[in-house]
Image 1 (cartoon, one colour):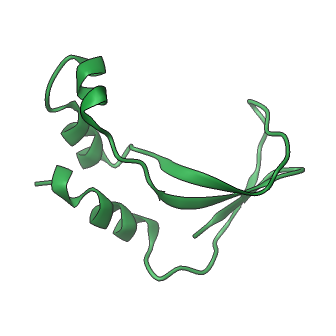
Image 2 (cartoon, rainbow, N blue to C red):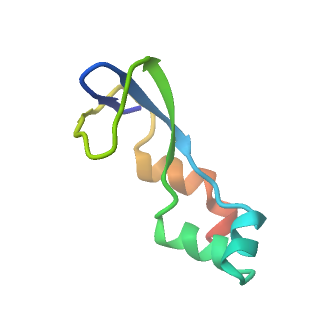
Amino acid sequence: MPRKFFADCTLRVTQPREPCFKFNVAMGFNQASKLMAQTGLCGFDLAVDQPGTVQAGKWGTLLPGPRRASIPERFQAKLFKHLR
């Protein structure tokens, strides 16, 4: 998966985030998580490969890494149940 490099830390994309019932409650309607999944705006979980400091407003470099499936393919596979 891609890696995000900052000045003194490295993060790795691990999997798509999945909205849950708590998001529906927070938004006030039962279809909120389905709508989020359909738009593809769920985001991704990251792992820390090299610890360091990241500050708001700081830019990093996104470098593609080895993977068996593209980010959209992983998103579709993980969130398939929400897309029906």
